[in-house]
Length: 575
Image (cartoon, rainbow, N blue to C red; front, side, top):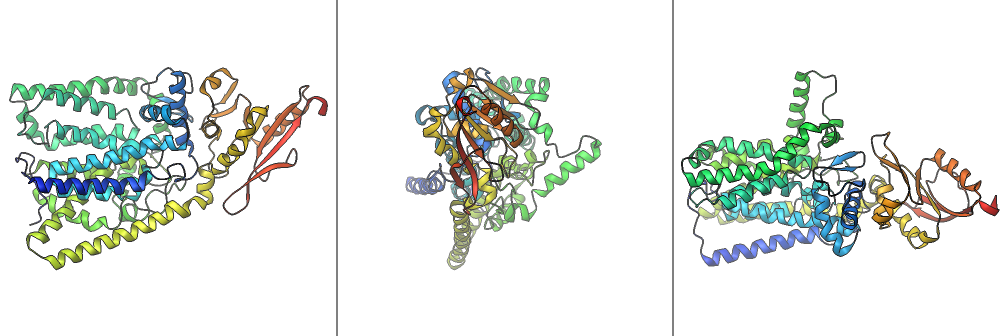
């Protein structure tokens, strides 16, 4: 019979010798050091460039830091902020503020909170796994998450989505910490801890929409599968107070958020409504079928272990959601947990969590299945794998099958090392040269901004392209971050916003104009006919006509022109 440590949350915690606890701490520190080695170095270079989703979070945070208003002028928003044509959560922007206060607005400070959140998630996964399934399971789960290619990429990406694994795990860990089911019900419950758990649950729901959807569904399912334990809590006044404190803490923050979703669905849910997996004319039955089909796709081996998310501007593709070496660990985890469902609340919660892991990505379309939405349940898959690794190890060691133990460990680590080396080589070295990645992360525009920065004060007008050659997103917000634009200047200078398309396009702010080729020709003609002499810098695509000889050419990794920069003087005596 496979064993992985405690199988029932009502059992008394195991007494571990001090020497064993010290060894566990040493191993945990090593796991965190390994995790940090893949998440912290070179954050400003890997991933290359700056994605517009990263830039808009950084810019809004910088506006809040310097002026107390987001980019639209809203003072300290709570429920949502305007960004790229939609409305997104504000939690990540607030997380950026202390880092920008120390290091300013740049690529590194935009990504550092994600890296730290990734490390905290690994530590919290160990703690949760150790409390429910034993230290071995916790260490194995933390180690696998530390080397997860998907989690490494999320931890190096400065977007609101990167907090999702932590935001989805933290409320559950808080329940266990408070002694609430499926935690250790023998411990003395504290209404203070329960209140903190409730408040933390509410705070986490103010993050990315995937966490906002996953957390209530998963916690509700946890209560359902441990209902008898919750009923037991209500038989004593002290325990009733703990449950009441949990509800009050969660309700204080979730209530206003739910109210906004009911009264302002066209604002707070604008992005989600634009990407429903169903079509507007579909009947209810067809909509349910499409949701069920997308949900089921998340359990297909090709998505889990081979293909993953196909958005190449964000992810290394094709890379599965999980390393292939976790497949036998997941099978072993199921073999351990399924037979114990009836007597172990922890096993019931784990299995229902694995079944629910893709729920946040079941309702919206994407170019493929969406890793960022799915990541809300990512930690549950690694916890199941950690339980499987621990169970197999204990089974082999208990029976003194030393040769089999050594062979299994060697095969597992060899496969893990092979996958890790392939990922490291591709993600950290060769990925940046791909055209989709180069243009999708605005490396061309960043290089042009590097040339422009020392000359900007002497320039009167900058005409920049409005769209990218790979992604049709506007580059205005990347320029704001790259040039470290002053938000106080942003609020005082002329601005022109075009909201006619899917994405917000600032046609102008200050001396910058983001215009399409026909608009640029018209603007150049107006400047040439003006009475005032002006220095005009144009950032052009290679296929556009040049107003004067190039001053600088930005080349892509293949050596082809990506941006041609012209520096001209127009108007006045030159007419």
